[in-house]
Amino acid sequence: MNNKPKILLVEDDDFATIVVAEMLAADYDVRHIDSGQAALESLAEGHPDLVLLDVEMPGMSGYEVCRALRDDSAIGDLPVIFLSGRVSEDDRLAGYEAGGDDYLTKPVSAEELRSKIKLALANYAERRRLKSDLSNAFSTAMTAMTSAAEIGGVLQFLRTSFGCPDYPALCREVMNTLSSYGLEASVQLRGQQAAISVGPNGPCSPLEASVLTTMSTHGRLFEFSSRISCSYEHITIIVKGIARDDPERNGRMKDNLAWLAEGADARVASLDSAAAITRQHTALSRLTASTRKALQGIEQRHRNQGVKSSQIFQDLQKNFERSILTLGITHSQEEELAEMLQQASSQARALYDEGLEIGTHLEDLLRQLEQAGH
Image (cartoon, rainbow, N blue to C red; front, side, top):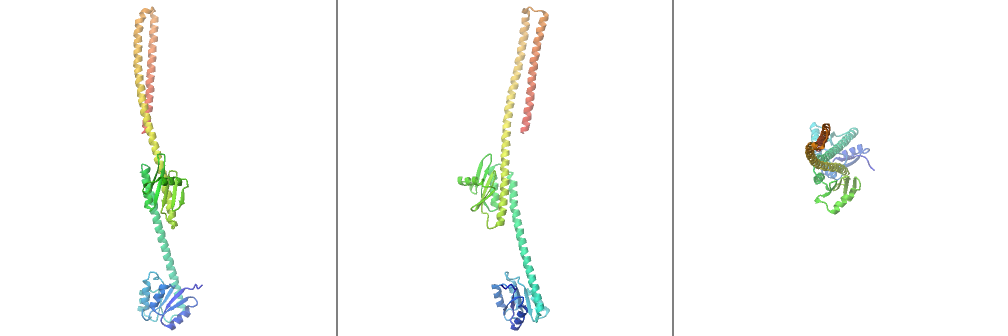
């Protein structure tokens, strides 16, 4: 194979053509065109690595050819070296304004020509490398910006998900986030409160819901047909529309899908915990209210018993005083019985007061339970 750099020599002078071709034959593949118009047509068909361009030619001048070449976006960056018999400063400036990379006057030495061509090709290669680097940098920057925007969507979901009061609201946030990525999705949430399945058009059909349930057993990420599923304990998402012919975007979407599902899974667990706490609080409130009511009933019965006990001892005292006259006992025996009766009354009163203290302790405990519940 001929790996020599290709040079297009545009020259209408046959002798000059032969001389230049001989100078470059060892290192370059030289092709000759004798007019400007033919040169432009040739450039449209195949691109050389460099153009050697005569200035004075019939029809189009070298300057006109160079300007036309620079206006062509496909070949506009090809290096162009003018070869001319004109030596004035104005001629050089004209070559510069036309877009030439260099300007050599005839006759030119082989050493100078080869040196100028070598430099022009090196500069051209460097320009192309820099252009490629710039293109890659721009592509990388655009990818980074796109990736940042996509991650921003996940972060926005995480923020808004904390405000979702129930499963349906959380499903809507998941669907909205995936929709912002241009993805069509179906979502199933499974929690302690319920299991719901939602698609793009509302509640899923029984078949679609069963597929979502089946996919929950196929691991974190599972690709099938034109879809991909992502599952955590409390959520399964099936999406379609991820471009598999774009591996980079495909990878980003899988990452975003996993982050989104993980965040939603955590929110379902949080909603379940909050619901459990609410149920416990409700049960505790009911138990507290029931206990308070029971305590109030006990306290009232205790007070009633105290009143009745007091009345019993009063009646007993009166009966004792009436009966003492007929018993035929001595005064000391009478005092002894009265003392025993008084002691029994005092002990009964002490038991009653102890019951009141127990009620006070229960009341304090109930108050602490109410405060803990709030």
